[in-house]
Length: 177
Image 1: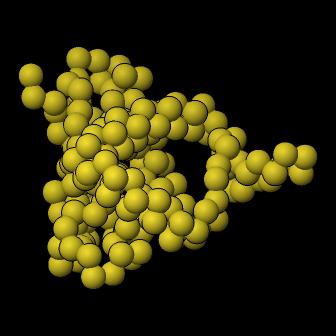
Image 2: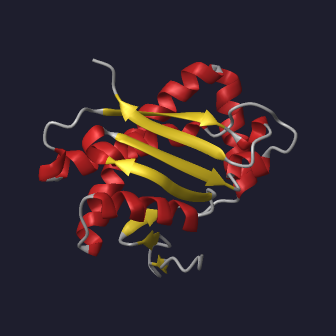
C-alpha cells in the first residue's frame, strides 16, 4: 500500500488538511499515552462507551465529507474509509466481508497502532475503533436506496492481536431490537 495521502498545510494558520478535512499530526506514543491515561482515570468500560459514541459520530461525519469530496457513494465510501485509516497510521484495515443491507461486516486489522505502542500488554486493546465501523455502515445505509429499511448497526472488537492472534477482528452486526 502506498501511503500517499494528500496533506496540505495552510501557510497562514498552520492547519493541516487531508481531503479538505482539518487534521492533527501527533506521535503515536503521545496519542497512546493520553489514551491510556484517560482509560486509567475513567475505567475501561466507561471510556470505551465514550469512545464508541464519539467514534461513531466522527466516522459518520467523515463519510459524509469524503463522499462529497471524492464524488463517491455507498459501499465505496466504507471501503475508502478503511483505506484512509490504513494510510493514517492506525494499522492496515482489510474489509473481509460487507453487506450493508443486513448491517453486517467483518474487518481485519493488522499492525494496530495500539498493539504496536503497547508491547507486552494483553487483552482487547483496539476497542477504540469499534464505533467507527458502525458509524460508517449506518452512513452507507442512510444515504443509499438499498439501505432503506436496513437495521442500525453496532460493532465490536471480537479478536485482538494483543491476545496472541495474528490480527484484530471487528464485527459489524444489526442492533438487537
